[in-house]
Image (tube, helix red, strand yellow):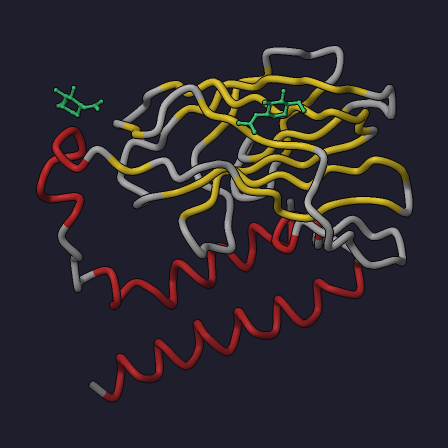
Length: 197
Ligand SMILES: *[C@@H]1O[C@H](CO)[C@@H](O)[C@H](O)[C@H]1NC(C)=O
Ligand SMILES: *[C@@H]1O[C@H](CO)[C@@H](O)[C@H](O)[C@H]1NC(C)=O
């Protein structure tokens, strides 16, 4: 038990040090988690003139869902992710279907987010979301829409996309307590990834 606590101490302590020391290097991409553009002003609080729709309202492992961003107004920029309800990290991956106007981003793994490629105004863009192989729970698509540098709406949400628990099987829906033992290691490795990506 002594050994285990020491191991946990080293991993958590080491990870903390990494996170603290990597911030000054500018190696983090802050917009990935809060989806707020670093434009020096606050987001609009009015109803956005943009919406997100998904081609399906339930997902199975590896299932492809077409996500459409559209507006009654032009948007110059966007950041799209799938998030577990109330979650703070991107889930699944995207396949870019309009490579002229959009690109995949590494927010939580390669292509876990999609953004604009230039500030050519768009009123409509699509991307294909590929569901993860293990269940991420019920989720929604969220996008930040930038109308102009000072005018943007953060985390506009789609309708809920529920997980098809039958397709993921019973093992993926039950919590495995063994993962708790590895949590410090997972945090440590993700700390390294955040620093070096
Ligand atoms: C989304 O926005 C478009 C363009 O304004 C509109 O035509 C469409 O009806 C909206 N869809 C939903 C589901 O709100
Ligand atoms: C859920 O998964 C089951 C098993 O793979 C499948 O038969 C069923 O059609 C799926 N339901 C939906 C709504 O996709």
